[in-house]
Amino acid sequence: MRIPTALRLKLFRLLPVLLLWLGLAGLLHPVAAQPQPGAIWLLDLKGVLGPANADYLSRGIEDAGEAGAKAVVIRIDTPGGLDLSMRDLIRTILASPLPVIGYVTPGGARAASAGTYILYACHVAAMSPATNLGAATPVQIASPSLPSPQPEQADKDGQQDDQASPAPRAGTAMERKLINDAVAYIRGLAELRGRNGDWAEQAVREGASLSSTQALERQVVDIIATDLDDLLQQLEGREVSIDGRSLTLNLEGASLIEHQPDWRSEFLAVITNPNVAYVLMLLGIYGLIFEFSNPGMGLPGIVGAVCILLALYAFQVLPVSYAGLGLVILGLALMVAEAFAPSFGVLGLGGVIAFVVGSIILMDTELPAFQIALPVILALAVSSAGLLALLLGMVWRSRRQAVVSGVTALVSDVGTVEQLHDGHPLVRIRGELWQAECSEPLERGDRVRIMGTQGVRLRVEKMER
Image (cartoon, rainbow, N blue to C red; front, top):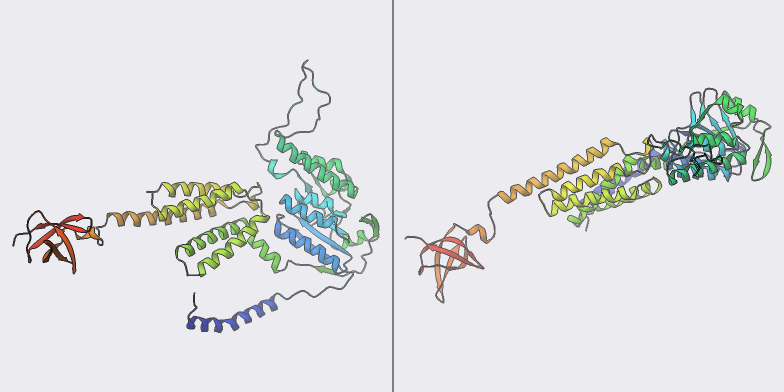
């Protein structure tokens, strides 16, 4: 498609404005200067742990190692998060060449669920007063529908099995696998850092929690610190093990560097929001449909392709149910099919139902932060259904309207026999000559009324002169 000259001139005029805007954006968000070696990097884990903040923390730890920092302090306040993001972050902590200190702060903060695993993985675990940790049962099975622990099975003689485990067990094999995997994982972290593994297992199996004072008493954490200065003072001279070697912390006089999320982390946080990813997917599909139905426009296809790729990237790192994704796509396909091949609402209604059900089960997690908001689903479903109803109404009205084109539209019109060709009359109707057939003989100049069609000939009736 060739771009008109006027449009190209407008684009060239807008180019300097765009470059100026990018320059101002660079001034407003300048690239952080490379910190001096020997600093202490401060990172923050706030809110639900997902792909965006896991990427920010992992890259922060790696960048601190490359910059020659003395240590990294992660300030934690999280209710938990995605298992995949948690494991990615823990792998980075375990592979870190410098000590990583997990610090649950400020007062009232918590390291629940995934936060407990991360705190266990850190080289030093610290908490502020009036904080808590625990409740580390996997979210997929920590639901009200979880069956109660099974009673000990009786043997054939009616006696209880003395070897049965007293620990609570989930009802299905899959739930037991998830529990046992989580227990083994957190016990491995506890053994690596020399912390209380028995309580860690209790936190997973029973969802137990501890306050900061109780956690220190039970050797779950190493330090209770009132603030960051108190934490650094207590860390001074402490020995930690990194890659099998002992390292004595010497943090006195080290400068503190607060490492904030950059544009990449902020952009990732936006597109990995399930609601945003969901809307991007729909915009992409509708853009491609519009482009394919009107080839050559360009803009809808480009926007649709970009939105689809962004949505696919987001779905790659989010816990997506492919059954739900398939239902959403099927629902959209049925609604589009209804618009192009009307079936009096059968395809459209099935499409709306498939779309809503697929949207509800699209995210394969029980975490509220990674669920698609029901108002968003209903709003998009109602919008699609409304558009479908509008199209169906237009189709229904068009079918009830009188025919204004084609051979059928000539019925009841009046014409004149203009000439006879080999004995067959030719009738002029609406400026055109048509071959006609009549039960009565016709002569030139006779007036006739069109009664119907027979192939490409008109059936006419002779009118009185």
